[in-house]
Length: 171
Image 1 (cartoon, rainbow, N blue to C red):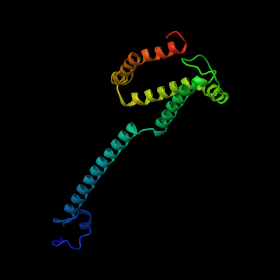
Image 2: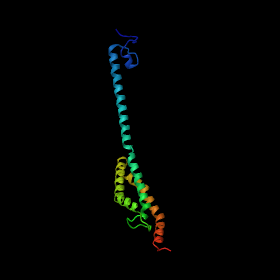
Image 3: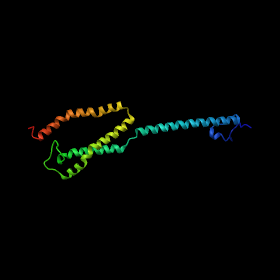
Image 4: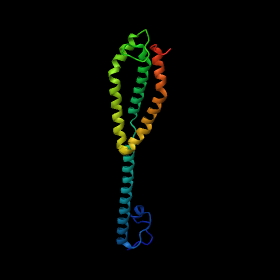
């Protein structure tokens, strides 16, 4: 006996619409519903996987950023206090030497440049995962080499003036 009204049809909640045409039509509707559901689940899973891959590629490692900030702060402090220590020749040296600056400078001095090379290698490795090598080199030239050249042209005469005047060669 076929159901014409289908109010009591158990497939109605699954399909959301009345099923007409008997058992064979109901089975066909259920199969069609489940195949559409599988396709939708697969599309959603693909979208989630693609979103996770994009998020994984572009996930920022904030602890590396903070390590770079602290390293740059350390470089600033090292260069600002270097006239007051006895760790080597510097452009300008103070007559008074501070023991604490000698101690801390002597402790951190051997680790400064190797740490920057380590940070640079990690940043390069992470950048090359997201960029082609040519694009990476172009970005580094524009972000590092050009400012270095301009800074050298502008700041080197000032540097030379202070060094020569401090050593008594410029009167």
